[in-house]
Length: 150
Image (tube, rainbow, N blue to C red; front, side, top):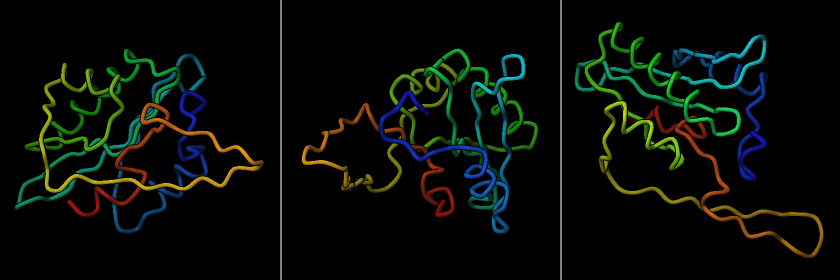
């Protein structure tokens, strides 16, 4: 998470609270490791949409924005969701570097309903507040309950 100045802290307690302790949703959590170190993760969810199973890449984070690690997680997620019989997969938010990986794996840009907007107000100590640009933010579907509305 040090790769992004604006990000929800995604430590073990947050991830367990957000994805494992939810009685109203089931998630699959994939982890990429190098030796004993976790270097990335991806959370997927399968839902029924119009009577058919759909899969979503709900949340992910990869150390050092490593696209090759992200690609491995995407490939594993696709394989698992296909084995579960999903007819389509989606990922509503991805930073630009990761979007290219998604495109290479068959994801295509698609406008789904009205565009969302994010409004934030930071209260930082001291008289000077830093301006954050879009590239400073890291957001996924998991930063809210977006996948619950699909």
